[in-house]
Image (cartoon, rainbow, N blue to C red):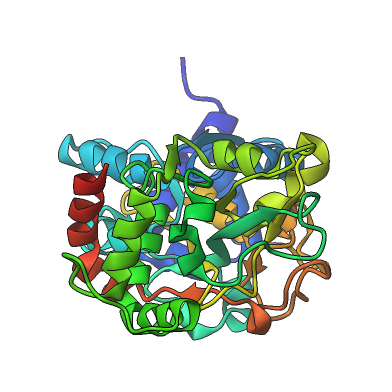
Length: 372
């Protein structure tokens, strides 16, 4: 029995996709990619956020012949999985949506496990700093949050060093930094900002800091914070519930994602960012998109990344809707900031430099391990 014309056409499209794998696909429009992507029929996405479920639904409404399979996997787990798959010679994910860039750049990108892609449709609307070495879809955060129902006049602290005092013993919550890389990046940034931490100590206590087994004021803060019965939990949602739950008289504070305020109404939380805390409320960092170096579905993978960068509507449409919330800062210059968010230029968080973070990150991980 001979092959049908439809089947022959599909094979031709797949072969065309393979022929373009040397980089020409990167230059193609979504209209040009679509027939190849439809022949592929599916696309696999590893995502560090559960919001990939909403993206999956929205993507399949626009591209009903392509099955998007999104897997909610933390950045730390993604890095481990992608590394193991590469060592086994296996490619499962087509698209990688991930944070923890200090490790992503040194482990995944430099090792050739992932590769950059910038959709040509939005290339002139994303600043160069957010296109290289990987495309940043948005800036995310790990910052100090408090319960605004219990503190209607504002954050209950104004200086990070207050978290090391007796008043806050056992009342500071965060995800274990050894389980989630973003939180280890936060600890690392505190050490990199040791001079600012030393100045904040003097403001808080009226005297220069005296180091007790620490190399600098940043390390001393981490040591003092752990010694003050820091509560470590397994997930960001655990932090959010502990800090933000309504009806608390004396709730803790915690380091979590500013954008999780989007769930206040649905979850019964009262989360708010402590934006005026000195010297900073935490960190702000890129959430990046990349291709697997040899994706099984290269055309569909590029369609997904294009979709995640938003459409031509004012706020980016369905692809960007899960991320167009107060606390996430999209990188496209033609999309206005979310009206309920603290403006980015007023957001009091340290912008991480992934290459600098990578230089001492393992050392800070070792320090955290000794404190647990």
